[in-house]
Image (cartoon, rainbow, N blue to C red; front, side):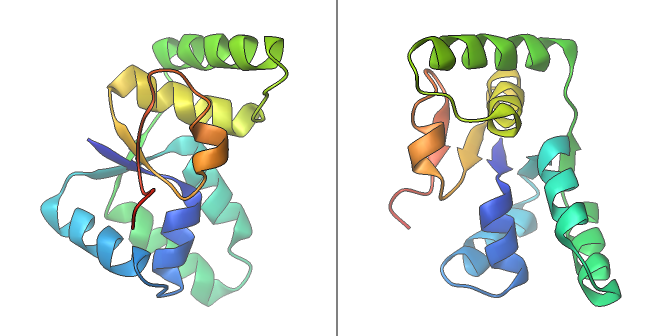
Length: 128
């Protein structure tokens, strides 16, 4: 399962290449998901009614993955591990990573710096 981070979904909404094409393709295959955290980020950042409508249409086309007990345990382990090494990535990114790990998904993101620190997290997006 491919799980989209907020940065690439925002690029899609703004029509920025190469992400607009990649996200469109993933939606068409029916294999694209995002997390409840990313949904929150998108919805809270949509200021105008037109932007809110665009975000709502996009989210309706995706599977939105919840923060389950397993995902929260994964996220907590990520946070403890990274912060103990002085490599924290913030609570939202830990939660996103936890959801991805719990679902065995591949995170589609431009934020390779943060998410690249997470052990066992599969990433896509580096070479687009």
